[in-house]
Image (cartoon, rainbow, N blue to C red):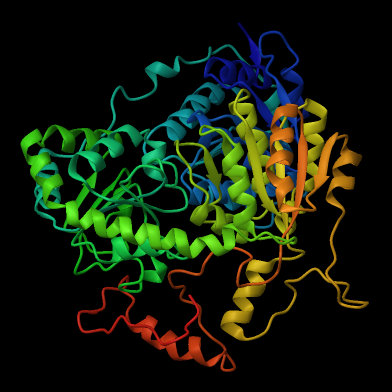
Length: 621
């Protein structure tokens, strides 16, 4: 069968299991999109309002399912608008396919409309190369079959990442008679396994440890390793802490869950990880926020903690901390092999020897819950984020999905919103992109249409992708948007106030008037998009009933929750440390503490064995 490249792309996507293409039409890709109307290549197309949202939507679909889908945009600004989305997926090691248009091959370099050609023609692949796992430039129709199966091979093997394919206008309408390749015959039959000697070394360290701890990142969820992780933690009585994207790998009501780690983290999570004699990292690359900027004793202490580092990507082993044992391989298989190498008698002895250790962590967790209670039980309106999150957790089923915006909603959810199943907490971790949560919620709902999906988002973040409410309205996608409105980028304000002693540009106020807080009328705005269930919370007693009505409506819904700007209760507790170089006029406490923190950082290999890890009194973070 002879097909145009557009038809071939559509047929390939269908045969490779892609249920949707998401994006925007433009002159640079309309020949591709037109092919999706043909019977041989017909595939549903989801129209968004901004190309960045297309990328985030596709990214979230993968996070929920492990199956990449396709975003498709035009040339020039349509393509460059996706860069934030690709960078988000790249930093968090998630995958989607981005197909963009390009100037016709015979027009390249001549400065056609919307072409980037200052240094090379085309220039956009160079832009995309830093934020994608692979790039392909299709300059002839017969390349398309090869490029398509190579793109999926890249996304589905090793460390996941977004892949970019650029197809010029003239190539889009060229024809090829090469058929779609069988993807099963273009993928490896197995997954990488680490050597048995390294497995034995890891087992010996875990069995000998008196205070072991497992830190789990998003790689464990990508590898579908939650069952093995849970089994290992329970078998050996090893407490587990998690990073942004590791949240959900172990149910948070499991006794082995010690909480979140880093900045912002939790007191039991940071205490457990920092005082471990053996630390096992599972799919975690130790970003500065997860490691409290590598300050010894704040989140981790490597050394003296001995590190077992497990990752699919050898580049991550030993990058930030020295390792006692580096295991490169598929995380699920590594954990399977460790479990297989431990006898029941060895496991029983390990559990028995750690009873007092676990009791101490239980006491830390109980103390932490008491610390959070002032924020969770805050009954005034404007209320606290933790009060709103408590209401959501009381209503949302265990398998309900939340997507989370950056700033205070992200740190509050990480710290104080329990998650019980993998792939149900979707957040932009390392890149912390604003504008992610709204399209991510749409992608999550498309991925699991029968599962409740709630978008937890601050007002500043919400307004970066607010236009995507139109997608929910047009396609009747029943996402619940929980807008935590504190009239500003208040996480930035709090950081400015705490570390610099003053703030600028981070509150939404009537700057030309009386300086009172300013806000959009979000329920009225949602009604203008066609939402019927829209409300603003007036009393905290209304939170749970409103969330329940929204979920039961099975329609797009919006709930606005006014949030106080009072830093003492508004969002997460400040736990951990962040290396933020200070201006000369910074407040006294962080100014005194900063050189102490800098001296205690371990990521550069400096000897910190004699460093005092005690902080200056009153230091921020």
